[in-house]
Image (cartoon, rainbow, N blue to C red):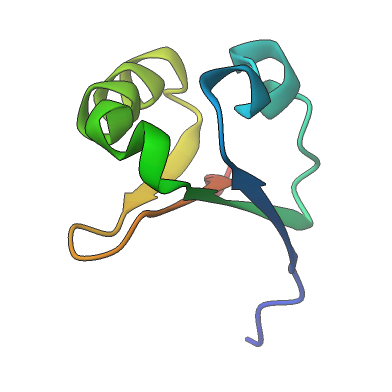
Length: 77
């Protein structure tokens, strides 16, 4: 079965530009969210990713170790 989801990409240059947990929870099932971290906040990436994984148990959170990318999507029901 082909994945019919579309991806929205947000470039986060500051900590304030990262969507809140509540904003991420509002992502519909047919949408994926990709966050790209700017150089100024790269050092927060791992901590933030772990916090988001814990706070979003109904989501698949993909953390790309070699890049500054995160992917969020609702898991299968």
